[in-house]
Length: 67
Image 1 (tube, helix red, strand yellow):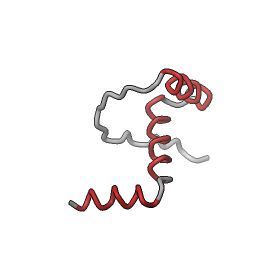
Image 2 (spheres, rainbow, N blue to C red; image 1 turned 45 degrees about the horizontal axis):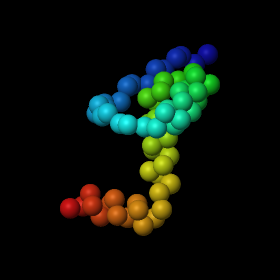
Image 3 (cartoon, rainbow, N blue to C red; image 1 turned 90 degrees about the horizontal axis):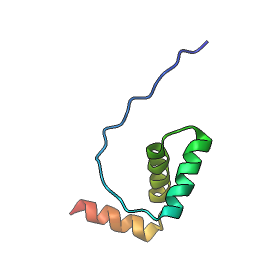
Image 4 (cartoon, helix red, strand yellow; image 1 turned 90 degrees about the vertical axis):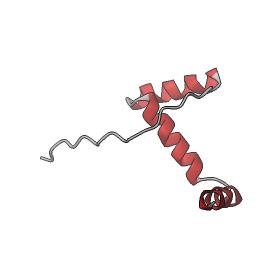
């Protein structure tokens, strides 16, 4: 039997965001369904969005980071 491995928590930065209530309700529902934290769902959704940006938008970010 494999042993339980708990992932290390990530070093994060605290930010305050104003998100429409309907979006928050959907994210909260998803976190309950998946039995995971709201924070983890938001991180996953943001990563997905960033990984699936329009190529021109992705290039703009990469170019800006080079400055």
